[in-house]
Image 1 (cartoon, rainbow, N blue to C red):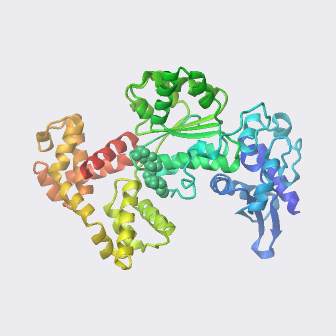
Image 2 (cartoon, rainbow, N blue to C red; image 1 turned 90 degrees about the horizontal axis):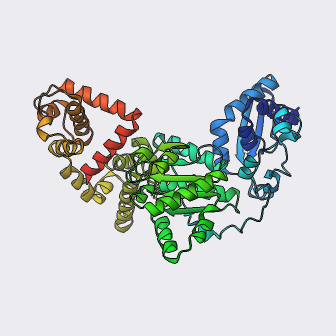
Image 3 (cartoon, rainbow, N blue to C red; image 1 turned 45 degrees about the horizontal axis):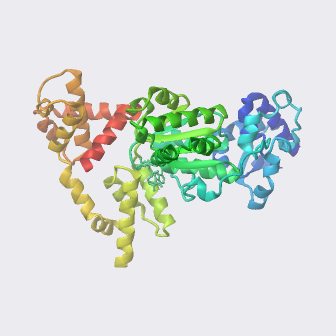
Amino acid sequence: MSADLWQRGCERLAAELPEQQFNTWIRPLPPADVSDDGEDGVVAAVRVPNRFKLDWIRSQYASRIEGVLTDLAGKPVRLELMLAQRDAALVRPTADSAATRVAPGGLAAGANGAATQGGVPAGAAASVGAPAVAISRPPAPASSVHRLNTALTFDTLVPGRANQMARTAALHVAGAPGHMYNPLFIYGGVGLGKTHLIHAVGNALLRDRPDARVLYLHAEQFISDVVKNYQRKTFDELKAKYHSLDLLLIDDVQFFAGKERTQEEFFNAFEALVAKRSHIIMTSDTYPKGLVDIDERLTSRFDAGLTVAIEPPELEMRVAILIKKAEAEASPMPEDVAFFIAKNVRANVRELEGALRKVLAYSRFSHKDINIALAREALKDLLSIQNRQVSVENIQKTVADFYKIKIADMYSKKRPASIARPRQIAMYLAKEMTQKSLPEIGELFGGRDHTTVLHAVRKIGGERQKNTELNQQLHVLEQTLKG
Ligand SMILES: Nc1ncnc2c1ncn2[C@@H]1O[C@H](COP(=O)(O)OP(=O)(O)OP(=O)(O)O)[C@@H](O)[C@H]1O
């Protein structure tokens, strides 16, 4: 009954899921090992070739697969996803290609309508396994040419609410490039993991398809390539280099601002890549419509796939990042110390890493265990800078400058939204970034009641969760205030 159960499950899923999803994620799976453990119910163990596919299938399809199998078996079926052994993974690539694909559980092509009528879409086949048709492709570049940092992977990227959407989209692109979310546009403040994420996509794709032509580059490298080729009049070389890629990862596209020739060449590359269903992932410090001095025909194209933000990590995520990074340094970090650091270093992950490095170095040099006292000592400069800089007066001035209102409006009774809102934002920041109580803050805002401050704090805090633009502005303000 075991192979049969899996096969019937696949047939049901093939009928229920969009064809592309089934072909990309379920169909390439090897048949499940199904065992009936009597009272414990039925277990269906499936080996998945790599970690990111495993994560994706677990988060997107596991409960659906379990539901279908349970339904067909007439008793509970538990799905156990596990990583395939290395050897197995090495043998599998041919099975992934369209021509020789092994159907799951013997689900022969033709056993269901979706498989026979549509077959495996050419794009999907190319995205999952080796390219289906080898039309005199130039050889894939050597790994040094990818310019990928192999340490920046999905495994080393801590997931959290702040990067959830961006990470999910990135995983999807890594699994099926050239399909959904093209281009993928990731934006957010400095040091929040945008670069890490796009390297992770490149590394994941290359692990799956070593022959894929992937290129990571910072926007400035593209600019300098354009300049070089302009001087040498070798634009064909430039085209050959960029237009033949399978995946282009380009960081910080806001640097294209005001560079007309660069924008033109990027536009050409963009059009050529999208037309041949190669994937483009871009990062920026702002969303496409917020980019200045970039031609609208480009920014509108940037927005044509999926645009996602990476937010500053919340406290728990900062703690998880610290613990994971400390572990990677073989210096386990007690949770209370991680909380202490995370509460005090809030701006971005890069700063968090800096603080962690200081604490670890201090512990090593002083031969002392890591505890809160040691962390306080190691970070005393950083903490004192923070304490010195963030005063309510400073917040009022910074917010007033940012929203172009007068500082006096922070204390005034004026109510127009153009003044009341920045004032509420300043109150929110005063609560978040200083040790002042609500009544003290109220006093500093022209003798307002503490309930007015509380209302502002709750309102802005709540909106921040939903309104990306506001969140971005607050992030900029926080970073400015922390210096
Ligand atoms: N979620 C995360 N888990 C683990 N490490 C992270 C995470 N987010 C960021 N980092 C690390 O923080 C550092 C800064 O991240 P990264 O360079 O990707 O930021 P960025 O958003 O591209 O910043 P910038 O705009 O300044 O280029 C890197 O070392 C990265 O590995």
